[in-house]
Image 1 (cartoon, rainbow, N blue to C red):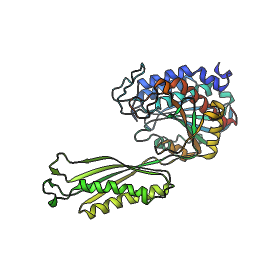
Image 2: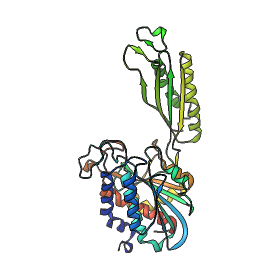
Image 3: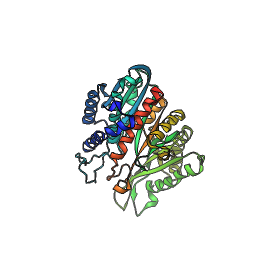
Image 4: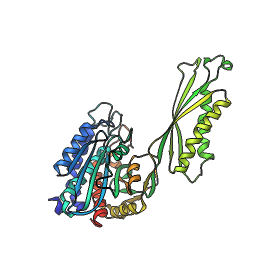
Length: 397
């Protein structure tokens, strides 16, 4: 019985099954809001552990509710389930069987880890003071499943007191755990800028208004917002990721479109850029006899780890992997919709190291050769998340 083993030992005992779950999910990836098979797999596993299970939340979300043997608080543990539209290039037995779709960010690992945690905690149900909500959300990589799950009531009945989640980290060694207090992931917004000029023959530019030239000036000027209008101590990124215009070399097109991603770590900077980007581009376009319209969309907010909850995770991590393998991470400019759960309840989103150069497992997230040392990383993730939940609910694991 794994319930009779110390928590860390129990995590390693079920490690082979957790790895097998991850590899099954890796073979059968599904895009956001299409995680039908994944949701069935998760629900069947949760029910096999004797956990009360609800499905179809925010389309394909799954929630397992484990009521402990004693009254207490409620902790939410979260994993994302969706894959990416990438053709896998790895030659492994568990390679994706779905053309053009791949788990290239580790969500298969997150789901397997949380199923492992559910297994461990279900076997310790009578020891738990309070309730655990195992929350499997869809569509982190696309439209975002966290916010609609919250709207569907996942933070209520019972009310969630704290929320925790993990992400596989290919930039830190397997066997390590990474933590970061305060703002840990950036807010992500998007601007779609349509610049309109006057089309014409490329040999007669003086009777046309070239939107591509206007776009060129705008691209350069946008970088000055970060370098000259934002406090240098506040991180921000403005990246033009796409430019669409024209069809052939001898025609000046009528329009040019820019697609811009904006990353910030505080609301003041976020608001400033949302105002200045449209104004700056419109001013440049007007000065060059064209026009510019900006469609600005606010995406995921800043992910903020509660300092006290981060201290709890750090203390647990030191016990699980040892103080020398706890990595103090800097904030990153990537975005994460775990941010919505952490707006609704204090908590911490932390990292599980998965990089292993000796096995060639070094490719980063969203790469077609992304793969992880699952045999080394997943038991660490299971032990850490289970211990964090018990530490929060019981005061000790």
